[in-house]
Image 1 (cartoon, rainbow, N blue to C red):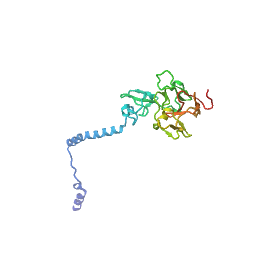
Image 2: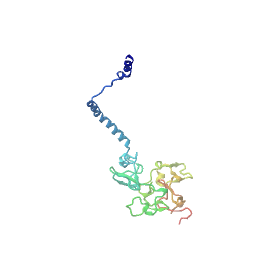
Image 3: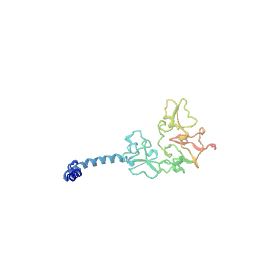
Image 4: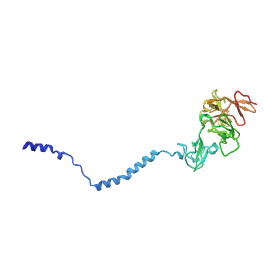
Length: 259
């Protein structure tokens, strides 16, 4: 009898378990509702911060489409771009960086994608930075544009009126003075680029030849020269990252002679 009673007491140990308070369902519901706005607010904040910038509002860090972000930013159309309302970039175009060009408020600057293989044209008409212009802005020489005055080769390889960027702003370019001569593996810039290095002391804007895209045929680089009416055959110049000739000069194969 006593043994049975002892086992019964030992088997029933529920009185040692902690008793948790039981909240009425109404109170639990009130607590959940009260906490919902804070939770949803936190979630919205996380989602908005993770969403990242909308690519249609401009490239990251480019200041969008408002030129007031950078008073010195170049004009979009002058550099061969398109100013249109915010949308996905047209085929063959990308959202321009601030260095490439900006539009007036309410529009986005889209620049043509650089042509692969260092080529920017197939026919002379391809050199027109503005497709609406029928007159030729330049001629196509083995995939590279030789622009007519008053046009310049742009970073896209097309011709437009905007002068090239200052030498110190161009990648792989260096201003050299005393003497104003480029190294053996460099190409000299045009008059505007050289003048941007300073006008008190003569200087040359020099760009590594390897960093300046030139004419190619079948993937092989072509050596060429520029025929000047005053100075005869001259080496090409590097303008906005492209090997080309000064306006008024004509390009020929280096193996040929100027007429």
